[in-house]
Length: 90
Image (tube, rainbow, N blue to C red):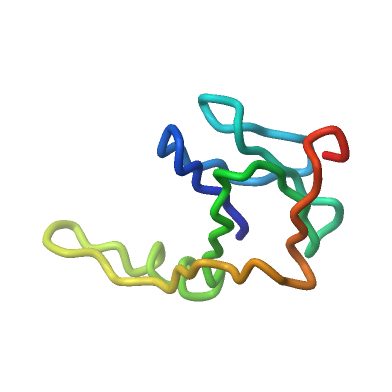
């Protein structure tokens, strides 16, 4: 799962197949197919969740106490599946 963190408004945007933006509008993006995505904004920090670990954590959600950890990571600035573009290209 690909997300964007806006360093300006601290909003986190989950990408889908249509353009979505953060609350302040300075960051946004969309999936271009099942794997690849584009995003815009100088204030954007691309983030990823390892889907398999997220699904496992959801299935193992406890009734109380601490939930199970899952893997999240900051995606590198140069990534073959997540490209920074100009806003009008998104």
